[in-house]
Image 1 (cartoon, helix red, strand yellow):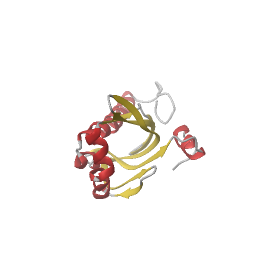
Image 2: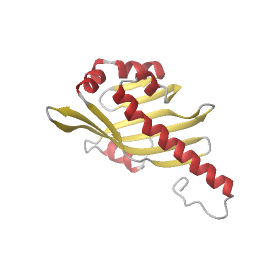
Image 3: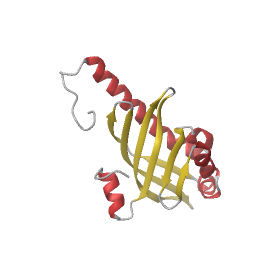
Image 4: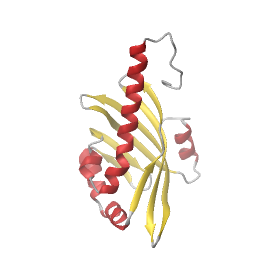
Length: 163
């Protein structure tokens, strides 16, 4: 599906294949975030964004540019989380392609080790704004809102209004 619409036989095979390839590239891009964050590869995780990309993290503020995003991940909050045992898990995204731009929505859950058990530490809604660059798809903006029952978080994950 492209932009919520089924690809039809009226579209050329090349167009349909290109859309599928774009969707797969976006899925791969988003799937890389969790393992990079958990491994402590802050530079690698920040490089998923465009040079001037934005990461708006529920409860932590807004970070502009790869350098600021890297600094966030190198910070004490994130480092203590991953050194204590953590797993950033993202659900499969719902992707809407619009030429060289796209949006994706998904859930993310951060688990952390608590003694011998694992507990859900954060559950969030995510809206990703993506752009095609010379290096491939990159994140232009990620909005992450805690699923705390708020209207804003429910609207974001439901695609009812842009963030």
